[in-house]
Amino acid sequence: MSSTLTLTGDWLISVGNRMQTHGTGNLGTYATGGVAVTASQVGLGRISFIQVQPAGGYVFEYDATAGKIKAYWTGAATSSVLAEVDTSTNLAAITFRFVAEGY
Image (cartoon, rainbow, N blue to C red):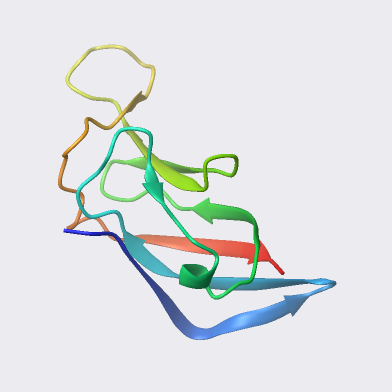
């Protein structure tokens, strides 16, 4: 399953000289290195940053250089360090909230 990002409510607001959007999403079947996100998916022309809230035991980060959202979890190991989710992990049932800012 592919990733989905849905803009919710009054999703576009002006923040100074930038625009901010918000919504929900899921990453579908995860690919190592993250799942690509385009500016149009989050209702912007260009992304400055995306903040993704943790959900379902996973922590997410936006990699601006690669233009991808990465997922992390504690895994089965006893390490306290978060590890990137394994490739082909189905995250379709994990719905997160996001805020994106850009132009």
